[in-house]
Image (cartoon, rainbow, N blue to C red; front, side, top):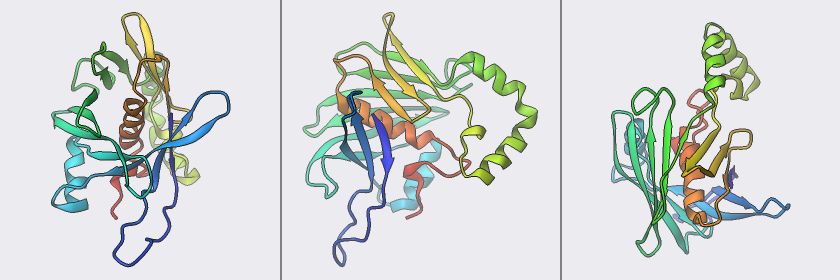
Length: 224
C-alpha cells in the first residue's frame, strides 16, 4: 500500500466541496494497482488553523472514503490522546467497530532512541517497529556536522530525501514481521494475510503526516 497525491481540480459547483484529492493505492505485487481509499483530514470546530495547531503535539484526525465524492466512509482515524511525544490513535470502521490501534512514541520521549510505532489489530497481537535501522542512525549522526550542507542541497534539488533520517520500519510480533514500511516508495507492506487492509491504509496515511517538515510535505498540514 502506498500514498499518491493528485490534483482534485475545481469544485463541481458553487459552494460544493472539491473532490477528495489524497488517495491510498493498493498493489498485489503482480502489477495490479488501484485506489482503495480517498483520505481527507477531519477538521475541528476551529477549522484548518485549529487542526494545524493541534497536530504539533501529535494529534491527527482523518477519514478514509471509498470514493472521491464522500458517498461511503470506510474508516476513521481518531486521536485518543496526544502529548509529551506520545500519541495514541484508533482506527474505527464505518459501523463504529474498532479495526485497530496505532501508537507513536517519539524518539527520546518513549522507550528508546528511535521513534517507536506500535500497531495492534483488533483481536490480534501488537506489532512493534522502530524508525530506521540502528546502523544507519549511527552513520547519520556521524555525518551530523555536514547536515546543514545536506539540507541546503536537498532544498535546491527539491527532493528532501537526503536531509531525512533513516525511515524504514519493520514491525515484529511473536517472532514474525507482519508489517513493513519501505521508505523508498513510502509503501506499507502487509505480510500477514489476517491484517485488515483498512488498518494498512490508515497506517500509510498517518505515516505520511510525519514525513518531511523541511519541505512541508505532510499532506495534512496544508493551509487551505
